Image (cartoon, rainbow, N blue to C red; front, side):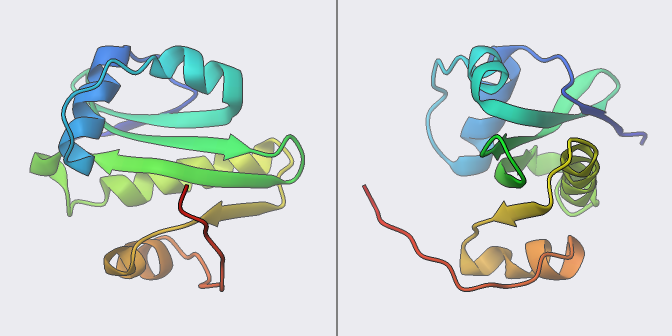
Length: 131
């Protein structure tokens, strides 16, 4: 199976909404991803297999040197095959090419192996306020 990764790749909102609902365990929502990422994000990465969207990650930023990985998701049937790592690697390349000096990510404890071991993020203390 060949996976194609595209920085700022084209996608349909419906495809990301389906992928996001499956990956994060919520109903399919009518989110306007296309408008949202074009308005607020440094970039995003689409992973495709045979033309089908199988993975997505959003890269938000502060307009300066800090970028943030959000919503990394791979379709359930293809998880565990390195696609998520490929998404993050392409996000790293895109953020670096844009002049960012730092790429941040927040994650739940069960994703430590993925983000730290597989993707190379250094663990750091962070803070969070639930709103």
